[in-house]
Length: 415
Image 1 (cartoon, one colour):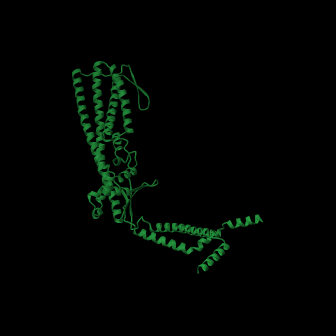
Image 2: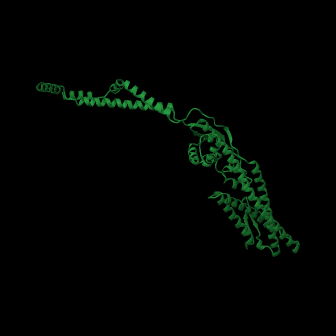
């Protein structure tokens, strides 16, 4: 008997699928009304929110081939962002992205925008405007495509498109001015070094001429000539590396792998020069470009007069090599100053879009309808639970009858 009662009690406590679905159908009108009210309220609120429009322009960063024949150009341009797109470690897209997100370019773009003068803006709130606009700039670079997308957001579609196009115009102006300024500074620096090198060459030639006139012709051995030739070559390379080093120190501040590499090369060349000019060894072994060892007589082993003439010949050859190197680099920089002007290749100019990106009425309505449905179901089950709990807490029927009889009896007595 107890087992039958327990089975009956367990069956009463089981919750079937019908028990779960029935409250929803029972209160289906409430659910529909609740969802409709919430959706309408959210829709009206969304319509009243300020709209934000977005305009997108697409550009193709110009990729240039590096000039491996000019070490100075490579060392210089590698440190100068946009002007050195062709050989910089950074890609043109990365450089463009950094420039586009700068506040200075944002300020210039806002000033260029025609809408700037129609918005009633003053110089006092220009700084706040620049910061707010710079935060809305989005620069997108896809991995499989070389293009770069610039997106600008504003409260007006025409303002957004005008700002995006102004950004590209200012970026092109920045590229041109940066390249011309860098080339001009480098040209002036090389011209200054070339004037000093020509003066030193004239002095060396004059000293050699006076020495030869005083001591007549002196025969120099082939080994001494080989030493002079290799020394003049190393001296030219040393001066070229010093130009590179001074250029980087002058135009670029901060740690640089290229600078450390140049310093190491200078140390190695200076060590070989010291061995050939100051060593007391009979022969000095140096490795050539192919790794083969070549033996040279140091200048200290050359007789006195031959040594003096060898030293003067070395100065003339070294200074001649320096002048030749600087002249070639000066011509290259002059060409770069007039021809190597990177421009912004605009594929698609920004057009005003009349459809706002936010707030999205469709998205907000769908999301609010889904949330309202969940909340309505939760309220229905909560109400059913409350009703069932209230029903279970009511007194038994017999107690109700006794209470009713007692209540009526008391009422008669009072009457």
